[in-house]
Length: 467
Image 1 (cartoon, helix red, strand yellow):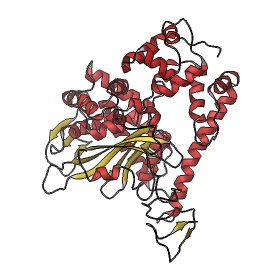
Image 2 (cartoon, helix red, strand yellow):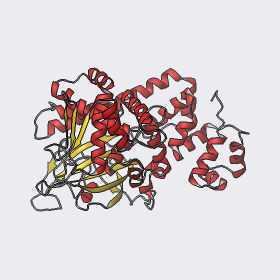
Image 3 (cartoon, one colour):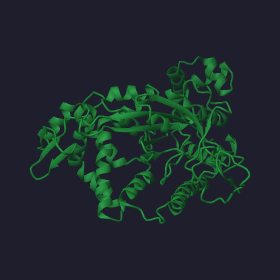
Image 4 (cartoon, one colour):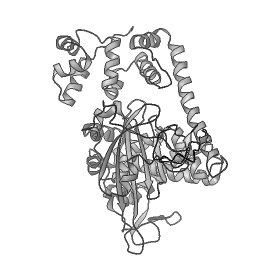
């Protein structure tokens, strides 16, 4: 590589953060302790092979170490090269030469792979729609907005940065603006009068009178989120309007739903400012209870925010996140990983999130493997959100958060899992409609693209076999 990379400070920081001795890090990288000492003292640069090992062992840290154009290109090439589509991926040296010597071709390969991945997702959406009971592929407004967030990678840069700037103004050196700061800004800067009283809605705003009513029966973190939502809707209305204008949605209802979604997004970014939240998340290895406590948010809000940390110059762990109700419907979903959620019908019954719905306030962990051979560490927790009144039933659901197994060292919930065992992973699918597994005992119905055979004289767990 033409630009030699000296990363002594960063290597020492990696060791310190994980309490590794030199010998332990050297063993992980497959080099001698004396060689690592030379690297840490910047007496020698990193080789392409070491760059590859570092990127595999410490993917997030390496993104920050390799800051040049060639390294950025190489990281994207490495990610594309790891796609199960390629039976025999190129080795580290080949990728390094490709990134440096053929930059234009490399960038076009990266763009083509991204287009291939996105097209595959869209075809999956169409396939599910055609094979579902809907009988068509027309999207309802909420589906259109959900897909917009998905293809925006669940990250809106202009809005996120504006919310982060506002959060700094309101919170100073604190991690997050407190309730008093939100109320004061609404009152003093935005001329909004505020009252907490039981109402038919969780939040009600009279735009003409500038009057905001919030139901006090909500949990404290929910009341605070409602304050942040209304503050963002008023203080960041120009940024939100600009995003909606560029979204090219098909209906007025879709645009209104996107407005609500963007206000919620901005509220999360205001209460959990990007860099502060990302730094804290990494320091506690994405322990959600600790994050929720530090930022005064709910468990679900912290999970959702983790799935949005996709800023180009400071990415977080690529997570998938979803919320599942008691009937198995996925009511929120996003994935920055290769795992994609079903749009119609329920998720795979073998996925641990379904068990979590029935066991509130207990965290369940699972190592799962999808049909393409990719392994994921999943965390799921059942939640009960109080209604504030006996007359209204509490809401019961579960949230799930997970990442690919290569990021397990960054995810506290992976501790104790046997990641290397070939039998340790639960073999899940996306949904029965598109899952190719021929030997699943939990099938609700066969995949839409496979014929079935039925033998009246033989009965297995399911009454047919895939042809």
